[in-house]
Image (cartoon, rainbow, N blue to C red; front, top):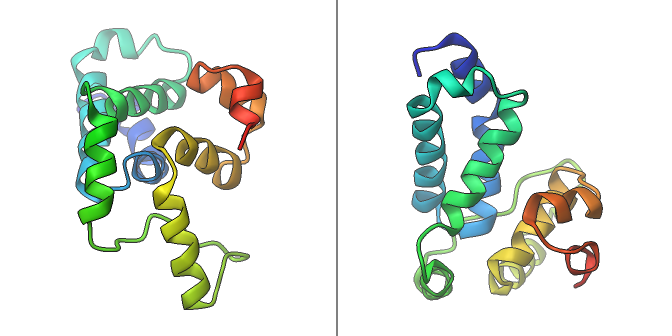
Length: 148
């Protein structure tokens, strides 16, 4: 990214965007690809991007769209989850699960969730979003966002 505001926005949000994508796709390479594609799209639309009021929201939406872009990707992710080595998708937190066995069980349980539910989990737990904000971001009803 050559334009300084775009570079600053990317630098400020790249790590959280990667963690967001990783929770959705549960694959480090696919998560990196989604963030890369989102930043590439921002650069392609550089003149329009400078008029975007909130680059962070634009980047997050674009990363989300990249995660779900390929038709049938959900089926691909489901198959990947069964074959992937156990790369952690849970973020470390100060109040997180500290015992190894408990963390592994939680990680396995989260991996079995559909991508959409992992996404809601990430937005609620790690980003502190309200279910209303999650519903608006994901395009589902409030009740769907809040349902288990």
